Amino acid sequence: MNLISLYYFVELAKELHVTNTAQKLYISQQNLSQHIQRLEQYYGVTLFHRKPKLALTYAGEQLFAAAVRILAEEHELQNRLGAITGNNAGSLKIGIPAYRAQICLPDILPRFYEKWPNVTIDLVDESSEKMEEMVFNGELDLFIGIMYQDNPKLDITTILNDHIYLVCSDELLKKYYQDSYGELKYRSSMGVDLKWFSRVPFLLPKPPMRLRKTLDKCFQEAHVTPNIFLESSTTELLISLYPYNFGAFFCTQMRLPLLLEKYPDANTFPLKQNDSIVEHRLVLASHRERYMSAYAEDFISITKDVFDNIAKIRPQR
Image (tube, rainbow, N blue to C red; front, top):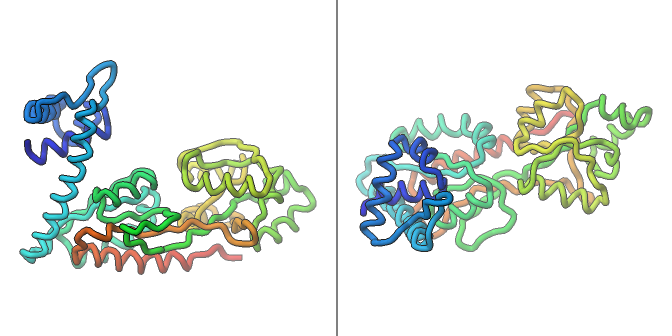
Protein backbone atom coordinates (compact mmCIF):
# COMPACT_ATOMS: atom_id res chain seq x y z
CA MET A 1 0.00 0.00 0.00
CA ASN A 2 1.27 3.48 -0.83
CA LEU A 3 -0.14 6.98 -0.78
CA ILE A 4 -0.32 7.22 -4.58
CA SER A 5 -2.56 4.15 -4.70
CA LEU A 6 -4.73 5.61 -1.94
CA TYR A 7 -4.99 8.90 -3.82
CA TYR A 8 -5.98 7.15 -7.05
CA PHE A 9 -8.52 5.07 -5.14
CA VAL A 10 -10.11 8.18 -3.57
CA GLU A 11 -10.39 9.90 -6.94
CA LEU A 12 -12.01 6.82 -8.51
CA ALA A 13 -14.36 6.48 -5.54
CA LYS A 14 -15.52 10.06 -6.11
CA GLU A 15 -15.89 9.76 -9.87
CA LEU A 16 -17.02 6.10 -10.12
CA HIS A 17 -15.90 6.10 -13.74
CA VAL A 18 -12.58 4.53 -14.74
CA THR A 19 -12.12 6.38 -18.03
CA ASN A 20 -12.92 9.82 -16.62
CA THR A 21 -10.74 9.25 -13.54
CA ALA A 22 -7.78 8.05 -15.58
CA GLN A 23 -8.04 11.09 -17.84
CA LYS A 24 -8.27 13.40 -14.83
CA LEU A 25 -5.13 11.80 -13.32
CA TYR A 26 -3.23 11.71 -16.64
CA ILE A 27 -2.63 7.97 -16.37
CA SER A 28 -3.81 4.99 -18.38
CA GLN A 29 -6.89 3.01 -17.38
CA GLN A 30 -4.64 -0.03 -17.00
CA ASN A 31 -2.37 1.84 -14.59
CA LEU A 32 -5.36 2.97 -12.54
CA SER A 33 -6.78 -0.55 -12.42
CA GLN A 34 -3.42 -1.92 -11.28
CA HIS A 35 -3.32 0.49 -8.33
CA ILE A 36 -6.81 -0.57 -7.28
CA GLN A 37 -5.89 -4.26 -7.58
CA ARG A 38 -2.82 -3.71 -5.40
CA LEU A 39 -4.95 -2.17 -2.69
CA GLU A 40 -7.45 -5.04 -2.90
CA GLN A 41 -4.62 -7.56 -2.63
CA TYR A 42 -3.00 -5.66 0.24
CA TYR A 43 -6.19 -5.52 2.31
CA GLY A 44 -7.68 -8.77 1.07
CA VAL A 45 -11.02 -7.22 0.17
CA THR A 46 -12.98 -6.18 -2.90
CA LEU A 47 -13.26 -2.39 -3.04
CA PHE A 48 -15.62 -1.95 -5.99
CA HIS A 49 -18.64 -3.68 -7.45
CA ARG A 50 -17.83 -3.80 -11.17
CA LYS A 51 -21.36 -4.64 -12.42
CA PRO A 52 -23.94 -3.47 -13.33
CA LYS A 53 -22.01 -0.22 -12.80
CA LEU A 54 -19.01 0.79 -10.71
CA ALA A 55 -19.89 1.25 -7.04
CA LEU A 56 -18.08 1.03 -3.73
CA THR A 57 -18.46 -2.13 -1.68
CA TYR A 58 -18.92 -1.82 2.08
CA ALA A 59 -15.18 -2.42 2.46
CA GLY A 60 -14.56 0.26 -0.16
CA GLU A 61 -16.68 2.73 1.80
CA GLN A 62 -14.65 2.04 4.94
CA LEU A 63 -11.35 2.48 3.10
CA PHE A 64 -12.57 5.67 1.43
CA ALA A 65 -13.38 7.30 4.79
CA ALA A 66 -9.96 6.29 6.17
CA ALA A 67 -8.06 7.26 3.01
CA VAL A 68 -9.53 10.77 3.03
CA ARG A 69 -8.25 11.25 6.59
CA ILE A 70 -4.82 9.76 5.78
CA LEU A 71 -4.31 11.97 2.74
CA ALA A 72 -5.42 15.05 4.69
CA GLU A 73 -2.90 14.24 7.44
CA GLU A 74 -0.16 13.71 4.84
CA HIS A 75 -0.94 17.09 3.25
CA GLU A 76 -0.79 18.80 6.64
CA LEU A 77 2.48 17.03 7.51
CA GLN A 78 4.09 18.20 4.26
CA ASN A 79 3.14 21.79 5.08
CA ARG A 80 4.52 21.50 8.62
CA LEU A 81 7.81 20.05 7.42
CA GLY A 82 8.07 22.66 4.69
CA ALA A 83 7.85 25.36 7.35
CA ILE A 84 10.58 23.64 9.39
CA THR A 85 12.99 23.41 6.46
CA GLY A 86 12.33 27.03 5.54
CA ASN A 87 12.20 26.33 1.80
CA ASN A 88 9.02 28.43 1.40
CA ALA A 89 7.42 25.58 -0.56
CA GLY A 90 4.12 23.84 0.02
CA SER A 91 0.61 23.56 -1.32
CA LEU A 92 -2.81 25.01 -0.67
CA LYS A 93 -6.09 23.25 -1.40
CA ILE A 94 -8.79 25.86 -1.84
CA GLY A 95 -12.47 25.24 -2.39
CA ILE A 96 -14.12 28.01 -4.41
CA PRO A 97 -16.86 28.08 -7.06
CA ALA A 98 -15.47 28.76 -10.54
CA TYR A 99 -17.29 32.04 -11.07
CA ARG A 100 -16.06 33.44 -7.74
CA ALA A 101 -12.53 32.34 -8.62
CA GLN A 102 -12.85 34.10 -11.97
CA ILE A 103 -13.75 37.34 -10.21
CA CYS A 104 -11.32 37.40 -7.28
CA LEU A 105 -8.26 35.27 -8.12
CA PRO A 106 -6.87 37.66 -10.78
CA ASP A 107 -6.45 40.16 -7.93
CA ILE A 108 -5.32 37.63 -5.30
CA LEU A 109 -2.80 35.42 -7.09
CA PRO A 110 -0.32 38.02 -8.40
CA ARG A 111 0.09 39.46 -4.90
CA PHE A 112 0.35 36.01 -3.37
CA TYR A 113 2.92 34.61 -5.83
CA GLU A 114 5.09 37.69 -5.55
CA LYS A 115 5.89 36.47 -2.02
CA TRP A 116 5.31 32.70 -2.33
CA PRO A 117 6.45 31.60 -5.82
CA ASN A 118 7.09 27.99 -4.74
CA VAL A 119 3.63 27.28 -3.33
CA THR A 120 1.21 25.33 -5.52
CA ILE A 121 -2.51 25.97 -5.38
CA ASP A 122 -5.06 23.26 -6.04
CA LEU A 123 -8.56 24.63 -6.75
CA VAL A 124 -11.64 22.54 -6.00
CA ASP A 125 -15.05 23.46 -7.42
CA GLU A 126 -17.90 21.55 -5.81
CA SER A 127 -21.21 22.59 -4.32
CA SER A 128 -20.97 24.83 -1.26
CA GLU A 129 -22.37 22.04 0.90
CA LYS A 130 -19.73 19.61 -0.37
CA MET A 131 -16.83 22.04 0.07
CA GLU A 132 -17.99 22.93 3.57
CA GLU A 133 -17.85 19.21 4.38
CA MET A 134 -14.41 18.89 2.78
CA VAL A 135 -12.84 21.69 4.84
CA PHE A 136 -14.38 20.14 7.95
CA ASN A 137 -12.80 16.76 7.04
CA GLY A 138 -9.41 18.31 6.31
CA GLU A 139 -9.61 17.74 2.55
CA LEU A 140 -9.38 21.50 1.97
CA ASP A 141 -7.19 24.11 3.61
CA LEU A 142 -9.55 26.95 2.84
CA PHE A 143 -13.12 27.34 1.65
CA ILE A 144 -14.49 30.51 0.04
CA GLY A 145 -18.24 30.27 -0.33
CA ILE A 146 -21.68 30.68 1.18
CA MET A 147 -22.18 29.56 4.75
CA TYR A 148 -25.23 30.37 6.87
CA GLN A 149 -24.28 28.85 10.22
CA ASP A 150 -21.04 28.83 12.18
CA ASN A 151 -19.28 25.59 13.10
CA PRO A 152 -17.26 25.43 16.34
CA LYS A 153 -14.48 23.47 14.60
CA LEU A 154 -14.03 26.04 11.84
CA ASP A 155 -12.47 29.49 11.84
CA ILE A 156 -14.98 31.50 9.84
CA THR A 157 -14.57 35.07 8.62
CA THR A 158 -17.33 36.88 6.75
CA ILE A 159 -15.66 38.51 3.75
CA LEU A 160 -18.73 39.79 1.93
CA ASN A 161 -22.42 40.24 2.57
CA ASP A 162 -23.23 39.43 -1.03
CA HIS A 163 -26.36 41.46 -1.87
CA ILE A 164 -28.86 39.98 -4.30
CA TYR A 165 -30.25 42.10 -7.15
CA LEU A 166 -33.22 41.61 -9.42
CA VAL A 167 -32.28 42.41 -13.03
CA CYS A 168 -35.09 43.51 -15.32
CA SER A 169 -34.90 45.48 -18.57
CA ASP A 170 -36.96 48.55 -19.43
CA GLU A 171 -38.55 46.54 -22.25
CA LEU A 172 -39.88 43.94 -19.82
CA LEU A 173 -41.20 46.60 -17.45
CA LYS A 174 -42.97 48.38 -20.30
CA LYS A 175 -44.40 45.11 -21.65
CA TYR A 176 -45.96 44.00 -18.38
CA TYR A 177 -46.65 47.31 -16.63
CA GLN A 178 -47.17 49.71 -19.54
CA ASP A 179 -47.81 53.25 -18.26
CA SER A 180 -46.86 52.48 -14.63
CA TYR A 181 -43.41 51.09 -15.43
CA GLY A 182 -41.65 54.38 -14.61
CA GLU A 183 -43.10 54.49 -11.10
CA LEU A 184 -42.29 50.81 -10.55
CA LYS A 185 -38.73 51.38 -11.69
CA TYR A 186 -38.31 54.29 -9.27
CA ARG A 187 -39.76 52.37 -6.32
CA SER A 188 -37.68 49.29 -7.11
CA SER A 189 -34.44 51.28 -7.08
CA MET A 190 -34.88 51.55 -3.30
CA GLY A 191 -35.53 47.82 -2.92
CA VAL A 192 -37.78 45.26 -4.60
CA ASP A 193 -40.83 43.61 -3.11
CA LEU A 194 -41.45 40.52 -5.27
CA LYS A 195 -45.20 41.16 -5.17
CA TRP A 196 -44.55 44.11 -7.49
CA PHE A 197 -43.13 41.76 -10.14
CA SER A 198 -45.72 38.99 -10.00
CA ARG A 199 -46.62 39.46 -13.71
CA VAL A 200 -43.07 39.14 -15.02
CA PRO A 201 -41.58 35.79 -16.17
CA PHE A 202 -38.39 34.73 -14.40
CA LEU A 203 -35.12 33.04 -15.30
CA LEU A 204 -34.09 31.22 -12.13
CA PRO A 205 -31.10 29.21 -10.92
CA LYS A 206 -31.80 25.50 -10.68
CA PRO A 207 -32.41 23.73 -7.37
CA PRO A 208 -30.64 22.87 -5.12
CA MET A 209 -28.37 25.90 -5.64
CA ARG A 210 -28.19 28.04 -2.52
CA LEU A 211 -29.29 31.13 -4.41
CA ARG A 212 -32.40 29.26 -5.57
CA LYS A 213 -33.17 28.22 -1.98
CA THR A 214 -32.96 31.85 -0.90
CA LEU A 215 -35.16 33.02 -3.78
CA ASP A 216 -37.77 30.32 -3.19
CA LYS A 217 -38.04 31.47 0.41
CA CYS A 218 -38.47 35.08 -0.74
CA PHE A 219 -41.19 34.10 -3.24
CA GLN A 220 -43.00 32.06 -0.58
CA GLU A 221 -42.94 34.88 1.96
CA ALA A 222 -44.17 37.32 -0.70
CA HIS A 223 -46.98 34.85 -1.56
CA VAL A 224 -45.90 34.88 -5.20
CA THR A 225 -45.71 31.83 -7.46
CA PRO A 226 -43.08 32.76 -10.04
CA ASN A 227 -43.80 32.29 -13.72
CA ILE A 228 -40.60 30.40 -14.58
CA PHE A 229 -39.51 30.78 -18.19
CA LEU A 230 -36.15 29.02 -17.79
CA GLU A 231 -33.94 27.43 -15.13
CA SER A 232 -30.15 27.21 -15.35
CA SER A 233 -27.29 25.93 -13.21
CA THR A 234 -25.16 28.93 -14.25
CA THR A 235 -26.00 32.60 -13.78
CA GLU A 236 -23.66 33.41 -16.67
CA LEU A 237 -26.21 31.89 -19.05
CA LEU A 238 -28.98 34.02 -17.57
CA ILE A 239 -26.83 37.14 -17.92
CA SER A 240 -26.15 36.31 -21.58
CA LEU A 241 -29.91 36.17 -22.22
CA TYR A 242 -30.53 39.67 -20.84
CA PRO A 243 -30.85 41.40 -24.27
CA TYR A 244 -33.58 38.98 -25.39
CA ASN A 245 -36.06 39.97 -22.64
CA PHE A 246 -37.20 36.44 -21.83
CA GLY A 247 -37.63 37.37 -18.18
CA ALA A 248 -36.16 38.96 -15.08
CA PHE A 249 -33.36 37.18 -13.22
CA PHE A 250 -31.26 37.57 -10.09
CA CYS A 251 -27.61 38.51 -9.77
CA THR A 252 -25.35 38.58 -6.72
CA GLN A 253 -23.14 41.54 -5.97
CA MET A 254 -20.02 39.59 -6.95
CA ARG A 255 -21.39 39.13 -10.46
CA LEU A 256 -22.34 42.78 -10.92
CA PRO A 257 -19.06 43.74 -12.64
CA LEU A 258 -19.62 41.03 -15.28
CA LEU A 259 -23.23 42.10 -15.81
CA LEU A 260 -22.58 45.84 -15.94
CA GLU A 261 -19.53 45.45 -18.17
CA LYS A 262 -21.71 43.77 -20.79
CA TYR A 263 -24.88 45.76 -20.18
CA PRO A 264 -24.07 49.07 -18.44
CA ASP A 265 -27.69 50.27 -18.68
CA ALA A 266 -29.18 47.17 -17.03
CA ASN A 267 -31.68 47.80 -14.25
CA THR A 268 -30.37 46.23 -11.04
CA PHE A 269 -32.80 46.44 -8.13
CA PRO A 270 -31.78 45.30 -4.62
CA LEU A 271 -34.04 42.48 -3.42
CA LYS A 272 -35.76 43.14 -0.11
CA GLN A 273 -37.46 40.86 2.37
CA ASN A 274 -39.17 42.27 5.46
CA ASP A 275 -37.63 45.69 4.70
CA SER A 276 -34.08 44.26 4.70
CA ILE A 277 -31.77 43.74 1.74
CA VAL A 278 -31.48 40.03 0.92
CA GLU A 279 -27.89 38.86 0.95
CA HIS A 280 -25.69 35.79 1.05
CA ARG A 281 -23.04 35.49 3.72
CA LEU A 282 -19.81 34.81 1.87
CA VAL A 283 -17.11 33.44 4.18
CA LEU A 284 -13.53 32.28 4.24
CA ALA A 285 -13.32 29.17 6.41
CA SER A 286 -10.52 26.91 7.64
CA HIS A 287 -10.29 24.07 10.15
CA ARG A 288 -9.50 25.45 13.59
CA GLU A 289 -7.51 22.41 14.74
CA ARG A 290 -5.29 22.04 11.68
CA TYR A 291 -1.92 23.60 10.99
CA MET A 292 -2.03 27.00 9.33
CA SER A 293 1.11 27.79 7.34
CA ALA A 294 2.52 31.29 6.93
CA TYR A 295 1.59 31.29 3.24
CA ALA A 296 -1.96 30.24 4.06
CA GLU A 297 -2.22 33.14 6.50
CA ASP A 298 -0.93 35.49 3.79
CA PHE A 299 -3.46 34.11 1.31
CA ILE A 300 -6.22 34.79 3.83
CA SER A 301 -4.99 38.34 4.44
CA ILE A 302 -4.80 39.14 0.71
CA THR A 303 -8.23 37.60 0.12
CA LYS A 304 -9.82 39.74 2.83
CA ASP A 305 -8.30 42.86 1.30
CA VAL A 306 -9.54 41.98 -2.19
CA PHE A 307 -13.06 41.34 -0.93
CA ASP A 308 -13.04 44.62 0.97
CA ASN A 309 -12.71 46.27 -2.44
CA ILE A 310 -15.41 44.06 -3.97
CA ALA A 311 -17.76 45.10 -1.15
CA LYS A 312 -17.50 48.69 -2.33
CA ILE A 313 -18.99 47.81 -5.73
CA ARG A 314 -22.58 48.99 -6.02
CA PRO A 315 -24.61 49.79 -9.15
CA GLN A 316 -24.85 53.50 -9.83
CA ARG A 317 -28.28 55.08 -9.35
